[in-house]
Image (cartoon, helix red, strand yellow):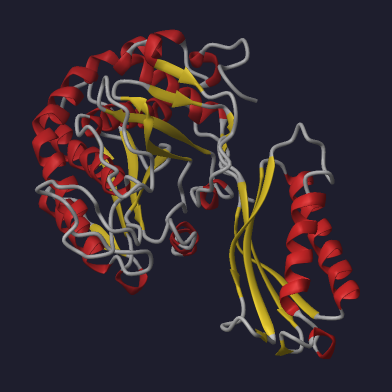
Length: 434
């Protein structure tokens, strides 16, 4: 499924009466007032994180900082194993233990990229930069958590006060595709009924969002190949089993035959990112290393292409006489946006930005996202949040000069909090068990 909801209203998909959507406006004014009060603090948080980036699997100080921010508004934050990641629960209003629990996820890690910006909040850590917007994601979700604490104070005792059980998940190691799995192993989505996330998108202007029902990102399989031959003098290749020749033949075969092995209407891409072997021009080496990635958007195509890679590797081995070792590793599944959760994100975006600023995404991205690890346990969805300054072309994600229009932070918090509370007011959905 892609684009807009297929012939159903958001109320129908959310299993809510239409009047329930209107009723939510009773507390939206208080919600927006709280977020407006927090906006300058959100910007401070984002700039602190941007200036102090930590790479995947090393986000200890970032996790400590997030926990301190949560504690400052009275939330009991649990720092996860090895000091990496934070989980905090908040009960908003008066609800019982059977009420749906909605999780909101952010990621903490930065990239090993040198920050090229000349700003007061540019990275102070050489070779590290928040070039994928994870600092913004963290500030958005922290804003939601701090908003909850403020709403409880403002709305305490009110009959119109929203009631919800919320969980805030700040995960490490998204870029290395470890962190979501680690958090799931530590119970992050235990007793959770749905999970939400946003990802900033510099290809969309501030005040717009991208919505997609169904597959949002690709399955990603990293591939390692070692070609072992017999080295020797470059003038006497007949004395060798040349691993470079075998690797060149193998890569050419993979590029030529993989696209012709599956239905061309199903997106897939194989790319080699590393080819290493040898050190001198007149010496044939003993070994060559190849690293690549396979991206697909459906399971049959993924399975077929992995089988074909094995077959092509076997053929290159037989042809060249070299020993060729293949392994698949660091695999992550596609993000599948659940219709009901996506409808909540669409409805909340409509209420914040207006329907004219909702853009429906026609095709899945071939990028990867370990948010999928949560979705193997519970239904969820991710929103693409426009962050480019109006009238400007922003640097792409992972660019050394990447930055955002910081008004994006409050917009993101307004949308994700509305979506969480829409889901919390609906019937409890059955938990996935995959």
